[in-house]
Length: 117
Image 1 (cartoon, rainbow, N blue to C red):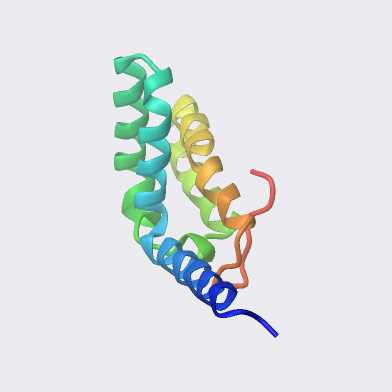
Image 2 (image 1 turned 180 degrees about the horizontal axis):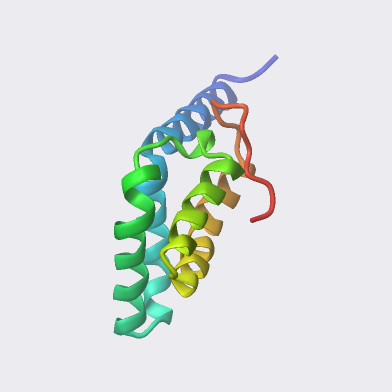
């Protein structure tokens, strides 16, 4: 039988997973950006964030992270590539990797997963 402490920890972990899922890509990508900006120049920081705000957030920003599948990311990258912005597509792909990989490590509400980007 589980102790009360273990039950509370499990319930908190499940709540955290749901909260993380509800945040969507927008907030998780911004958290990733904040964690990494100390390693980047100011120019690179603003370039990465501007790319995300212009290209990724409008279509995927409010989608729960656990519901974003490979096809969503590929559609987004193809749209960016079609306008000739190959380097931007590479940056977006890189910037989406961390939040989407984190999704694989925790249970999520949607069945769709995003294997190796």
